[in-house]
Amino acid sequence: MSPYRFCVAPMMDWTDRFDRYFLRLLSRHARLYTEMVTANAVLHGDRARLLGFDGTEHPVALQLGGSEPAALAEAAKIGADFGYDEINLNVGCPSDRVQSGRFGACLMAEPELVARCVAAMRAAVPHLPVTVKCRIGIDKQIPEEILPRFIAIVRDAGCEVFIIHARMAWLEGLSPKQNRDVPPLDYALAHRMKAEFRQLTFVLNGGLHSLDDAAPHLARMDGVMLGRAVYHNPYLLAQVDGRLFGDTAQPPSRMEVIERLLPWAEEQVGQGVPLHCITRHILGLFQGQPGAKSWRRHISENAHRRDAGIEIIRDALARVLDPDITRAAA
Image (cartoon, rainbow, N blue to C red; front, side):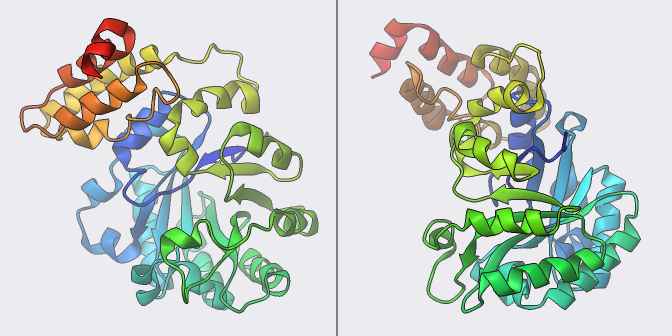
């Protein structure tokens, strides 16, 4: 069974180490990805802050952004030394900031440069998979023509895993937010890439909101990647191990997840981490459940206090468990 069968997408400002620790409490098998970190930030920034993670997060991949082969190779080596299981190159982000740095989705127009980057990274970390997350094309490109060529060129540089966001990125005229939703999805093209390059691993990303959405694609692809759907409704991860990986262990309840989170959260707060850095990621845990609104409200209104401790989480949990508290808070 592919280790890429279910992945949680890298999401800027969201999939930080606090979020990944929380998500790992819900699924033992889902593959987690960091936020994109630029190669130059790794080389010149606070590496412990940018790259540090908890050992329980495995399997976890580091996503890098950049277009300079030497810098990416050095950053990949540093990431490998930190213990990441995979180094992923971002060739899909459409933001203006990314374009100005000549990386992200604009690299879809330069497959030879992407290949040089991948080759350099592979040479630096021969023991780890170097993977690419890309779009099906950008702007005026014709995806049916450019995507197979892009994959072939990058494959020849040593990349064996492609995560395809099955949309074009329109770098002219659309915001990054619009680029997540406006360009039409072309799942059929992604399916054809798997059929054409059978020896490679392909993960489908884009427009998947649930495991039911993802299930039909797993018959034709090696894996699926969900992003915002997981972030806003993280408890869907509790179904992943059983439904997609055949794990017979009983999935954790929401209450069990919080009870396991609390000691770690207390330790983090004791080390100076503001509570809201942790709690902002758990607001959706009770989505669709009685008391969910009170849970979110209590945390949102109190976690930013300078003296906030884990009692905020316990008090919020009490509002879920006790209908009288929930009604009083409404």
